[in-house]
Image: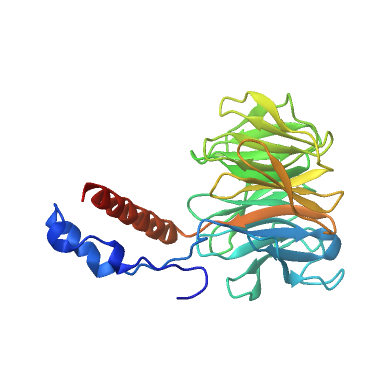
Length: 315
């Protein structure tokens, strides 16, 4: 059996003749079930501006340079925000070249956009597959169709950094100069979401409960906001210029601590640990979430194991 997979022994299944529900015998066809044992563990990607690279970290924290790392030259002059599309392609905003690069799952690099950008920083996809880019220099949010056709979604912002969508399709924008988190409806209608508890906001990320987490660079803290906009400090120790934020499927929060070159991991309960260190200005961060089909497979196997356990208990 390949590494990372396990086998369900046929002997552990009750004989079909003893089953109280004959249809369960169909599961014997799949008596040997194999799937990645760590399929809910995410691979973490980090834009390392001091190294002009995009790095990949395994669940164990092993670092691999995916692209760049060759000094101030293409493909990256200043890699910032990152976002995955539904096909597993990673999009990277390159600030000083005013481009967005795309890295395919097999590592091939290509240009996605080089117009409508003005020091792009944060990136985020909506549910329809449109990519949004925060333009730090001219204070706009550019929206790109999956084919790369761009248009201005919002203008008049002050040095926007991080972007994040909530479950309802509203876009949240971190305003680094005016210390404001703004919310924009799908039609572009804007409103102020939060100002209190916001101090040099950079990265944004939502947890599964709809709470918005904000990396406050100026006070080295992570602020958590309820869906109603009530803020509280989630973490304020062990951070040095926190920048990017991302969650994995288990609800763990990963934070790039830019000034000291670390990635800090927080459990849902707030316990922290150093996930990686020795980086050169890690900025934004993104997690590759397993595909829905993978999660469905995991759920199906879990249900199968649950049924098996109940049948053994009843025998």
